[in-house]
Image 1 (cartoon, rainbow, N blue to C red):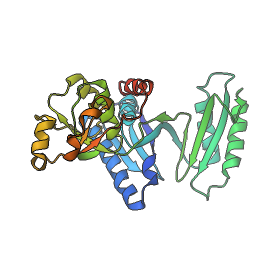
Image 2 (cartoon, rainbow, N blue to C red):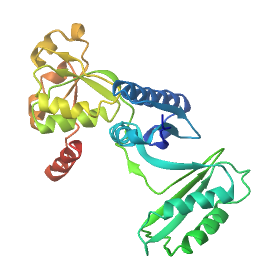
Image 3 (spheres, one colour):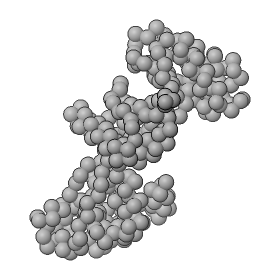
Length: 288
């Protein structure tokens, strides 16, 4: 049997870095577990572990697109990169950089940016930039440090990762269960719920929510499945303790109707203050 080519993916954190060390470790673990559960759900064979300030995934090359789709929809992921790996030796770094640059359009400009986590490496970050940049220049590419067409990133640790791509994730906080309720009837409801999910709160959904909206939101619930309740907001208000719902998500169109609800629940209105154009653009983003 032909051995399948392996591919590594470097995953970066965003907002969770701002948390206290204890909370950071909790959220980092939650993020890893969310991704791991989604990989298992989709039957994707992959390894995932913590690197030097990063999460690292390894899978077979043919699953790269599917894994990328998971990461693009994982709250807590700031960005990720498909990387090339080599040993921490300047010769290997140059050879790997040459392979990456060979795929660029001839005549394009470039910049090299090195991050050296291992300070024992024999060259400074600036020296690596200069050595690698000189090699790439000899291939016919032009140096442009301010607005390059391509950026070669080099991260030097116990191993070296090189890449020329940074794919954005949704950011925010890793998703977890919560006592928040949402009813999806409009696209504005969908966006309001998504924005709360970006804060790490997975809602309980009204069973009468529109199926097409639920389907869109499910893409963003990486590692989780939604639970549903067959009750109206009025019914929830009457039996708040039993239903364990502590907050409601509403869109702009519902704000005027929430005065009575505020006596029983915390009412979340994430679209308040947003302009119609911004709402439209964000809704479009959800459908990607």
